[in-house]
Image (cartoon, helix red, strand yellow):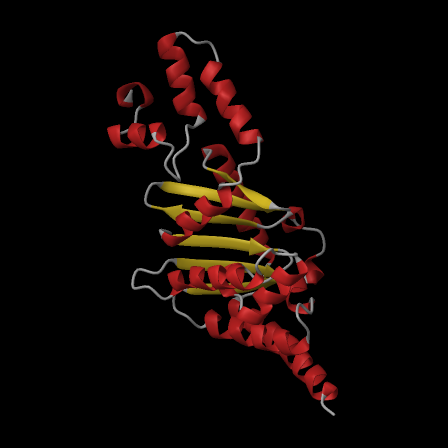
Amino acid sequence: MAKIMNCTKGTVSNLEHARPGYRLDERQAKAIDEYFGLGVHFQRMVRYAKSGHDPDWSRQHTLYEQRALTIRTYEAMVVPGLLQTEDYARALLTAGYADDVETWVKRRMSRQAVLAKSDRPHLWVIISQNVLDWPVGGAAVMAAQLARLLEISEMPNVTLRVLPRSVGAHLGLEGTFKIVSVKEGDVVYMEACGGGRLTQDLTDVRKYHVRYDRIGADALPRNSSRDLIRRAMETYHDAVAQEQP
């Protein structure tokens, strides 16, 4: 089977055991169909599988994140999970009616350990200016969250940029996504209401790389992005001061 599919024996074993991160792709399905004379049987099943929602995708996305060499993420509405403070995450999860808010906050915070490990990934982040201006949790929570963004932006393995609203219509309006590069290749995670979707399809992955680069072409440089974050943070600090008796 490894010869037929042009892969390693280990990959065949991982596919057979349905291990996280391993899914039959269209190229492999086509090779099987052609070898056994099955028409498009396996190719059809792969297309059906890709079109459905898999509740396990979120867990697999986290496993990829832990092994990542490089992470490229674009966020249109909220601070990416890897960069959230506890209070910010708690406000989001509370608004989303999470069944056990504190458990989910702990899980989200535990994911951030990937940024502190010795072989931590290179993290490329583009956030919409809307992320800075949407007062999740109130002024005090936002001020602390933006201070956290500034802190993380100074890490040597992190590049953080802001896409200003002055750009107008752009590709990022279609939604948030993340490209995770691991030793075996790249995978794209697309967020959606109630879950998300992973794809390892080479054609899809290439399209999202182009999408990320085009969004990045309109984003502010790093220093200008920090200046915009600082101005937003000062606005929240002023709001907090006005709230004081």
